[in-house]
Image (cartoon, one colour):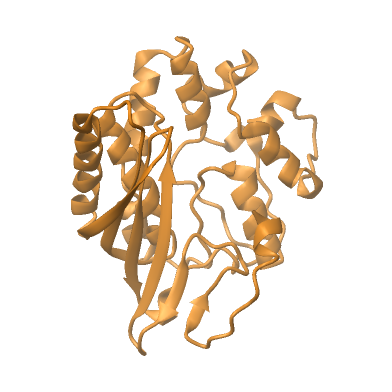
Length: 271
């Protein structure tokens, strides 16, 4: 993705407060002295079989980008990829699940777009609002900051373990609860504190998103592996060779910026 974006000419506009140069969670455009528009879009393939839960997970994932910028979501558009072989009732349930999270976030669904796709995909294009002086970026971390994770890690491993029949039901349920929980409460809480930078951790994993924050902020992030919160069974499953398709490319992308100051197994590095 970085190679692709490197070929896109830079557009200079003083009203663009956050653009593509820092790879942030969303773009931000100043409307006036008191309001800036936060714009993002995201969609995923189904991590679960239940279409309603899939809709909730995908919507929460897209809305998370707005919260990561310190903003509140206001409008959403459905983005839906439709395979011919699936019944319309399935996609109605997907959209119902998405709408439940849009409503919970206090936003309004105002339309959407569909396309033929051999693999089902669903997500949202979301707009949010934030005061221009209160934008949170991934590029403004400061030496001495503490790193706070609001959710455990290891969702992909637990999901793939479930597909292989190896994840305990209660652990899969915990992951679903986490994926369907909006980051709304975390976003509301951090307003009461001096937060210098924020990002959400999704497809590029902890190291990928942390690496982007470190590079764009000009700082080094120190992470104690033993203090990382993983979902129950995530480490066990990964050591049992249950991984995700993203682990290897994500590791390769950040390997040059990672330094382990003590012996950490290859499996734990990948996780």
